[in-house]
Length: 157
Image (cartoon, rainbow, N blue to C red; front, side):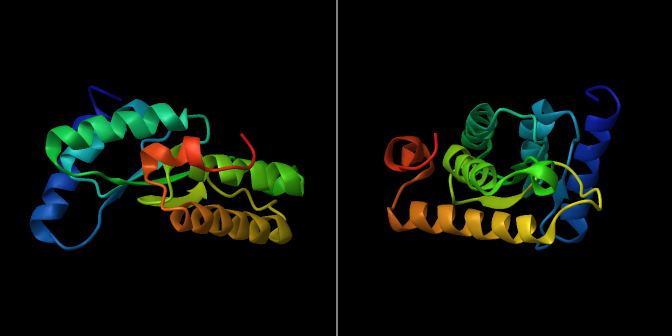
């Protein structure tokens, strides 16, 4: 990834930004979350995060990279898509809450950390969407910034 794909992904973002400076560029380095800070520095506006990435570490890495460049990419992901197949209500709500709590509600697109497999239960998908919305609204209403969320949000830990 570092020697072949990452330089090319960086070049793609740079060239797209030259041609279309106002169009957001999204990148997903599947299985290579360590590359997200580099993608952010290259100009990606959104980086997608796998379900198996440590959220707090990823947010910290992107924040640190953003301090250097003066820009911070939006995070997309990283809800475990398997919960939409066989997760119970409590597990889905807890995972959605934890995702918002760990990443922070601002600069987050609550989404899956992997693709759909066609086996997802539509009721679980609706529950996921509502759970992300509820957790985000609660965090924003509390006025919690990204760094304060862990300390200020109640709910599942």
